[in-house]
Image 1 (cartoon, rainbow, N blue to C red):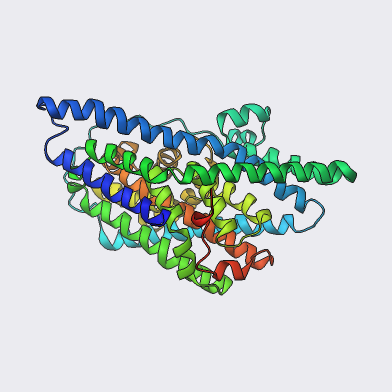
Image 2: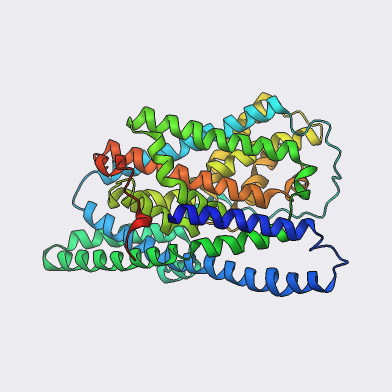
Length: 429
């Protein structure tokens, strides 16, 4: 059985086990002795521990992988003049995709009207997180202490330092440049091998993560917000499959079917972990090995995309804004929706690296059009499930941009991309 099918099987079994426990009354206050034992020692104990260890093991590799891979790419590009064009195309595509995602989500939400006739309690003790100013956000991009940035896993600061370090290596010249490039390339191979080793443990980690989640959550939370939930899910699939597929076909001429076939394991990882950063090692490996994107492009676009490209989050913000406006019977008008598009697009980049970025950016969007921030409490119950789906859309968007930019820069191995039998999961470990 392929690794992708093993992960999918782990997802299905984990969901079934968790839901069965939940449906049979596993998380009700009046548990019997067996249910209490299962809850405490199996779901909250064993499964939770294995799931968290799996996530921690993935995050363990994120900082060294991003740093080493970016240094390799920047050092190789240092003597060329294409870095500016590559960065411009990457950022431009990310901004355009996010703008379209917000506009699409608002259009669908206005047509569906998920918040119409909603009878939900609006009283809440929800406290909006503090929003950093634009000045502070810009200052925070440049690291004052690169080592501290790595400790804190501040991806934008790590990207800035890695690029400067790689360029510096390329400018030294002589044996120093050659030796340093060989050293970092060898180090990159070692880290990739570690990624491949951890991938073999993914099905077990995925099973435990989803079993623990659905044992405590279940599907009852979706019932009251079904219209909102499925509106967001519909737009996520429409954007993630329809828009991205069309974008690849139009801008690169490549087959979107091949793309999604090779990206399915990455999207399953993202769905299970609900973290773009934790998925970076798998995304980067798949984009380079399976899709044939040159390391010089992948090492820049994938870490940057995991930090600033949040199409899935932007879709949630668009639908949530319409839902909250309708729930409170507030008409924000066309001008308000245009402001939402602008604010959500800028916020997805401006608040990159901030913990709970989805919540922070939604707060900014609601405040920009005068909607009550307390409305977030109406949707927060189903946000964990939606977060899993939109993370899959986010990582797919990162890979789409990497492929398109690589194709335009003639840094894409088209034969490798089209080779459907080629898959990183089949590499010997």
